[in-house]
Length: 374
Image 1 (cartoon, rainbow, N blue to C red):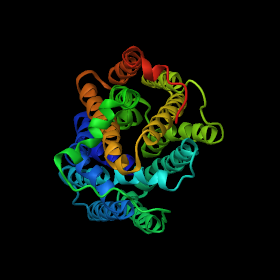
Image 2 (cartoon, rainbow, N blue to C red; image 1 turned 60 degrees about the vertical axis):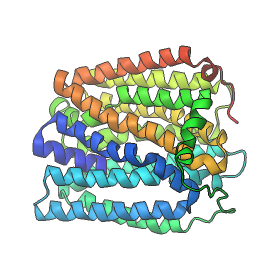
Image 3 (tube, one colour; image 1 turned 180 degrees about the vertical axis):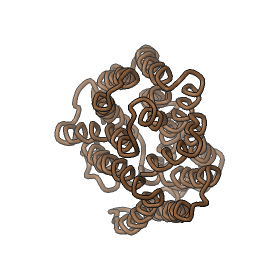
Image 4 (cartoon, rainbow, N blue to C red; image 1 turned 30 degrees about the vertical axis):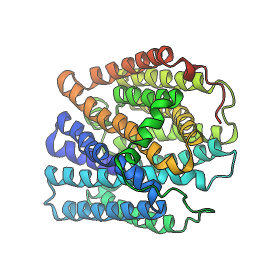
């Protein structure tokens, strides 16, 4: 809902592709600054409490946006300040939330557990953009009020998690401890290959920042159409997670990931050229399904190859790459669209994604030849 409401509100206030791109940059800066500290915190403190604290900050920030929108005094600078707070909370929350998953999944079922977790997230991602678009059409304050309610509910639900064993890692803060995750990833070529592939592929191929432009100026629709476009990738992702939750990928997992990234790029090209909202939705749904294959393989590979007392710090490196790809990808898309137009920006991004996948197949042969997870 935040993506729809903030994107539409910023574009309505400014009509600027540059400002849409700046939303992604403002979100990413706290991640770049705090991510390694956040990873160490996830390995040193109760991960549930870290997650709850961050979600409480997000709830309060959403309430601020609702208040400002309702009263009519909210401006672009204040929206950017709120987005920076969201980015700060997410930067700290992400590694801790990711590291929680192996503690609640039975042994030998992490790939299916990751698929179910991804599916739950995608179910929310399907409903929320459409709900956010409809809520924004009723009143700009309404999606922010709903966000505050759901984040408050998340605080309660995360407090109900019970772990079978306490975290063993209690390493004292030090420079070496903070960056232990970087060293671990650098020594593990399959992990380095898979998370860097995601970084560059989504950095180039992400089109989410351009969706308000496509909705208003190319597909000629309103907030409800933007909500459908934002939800389409999640529909494809949810269908794919339903398949992978029952039928885990057992063979040639490395090649399957590269194939998924190439399909991601091809669907981005199709979306860029489309002038029909239904063809655009179909392309985005296929894009989301392909991305889910890559996400589940990457997440499972990182979790299975990492000791529990290192999962926060290794997850922080992974989280940094993910946010760099999505949030800096929005910035890159906005800048490219400001220079060349929305359609050329999306088209170049899709072609670049395909080129990166082909190059990474050559640079990381051990990842390409990876047969099984675990």
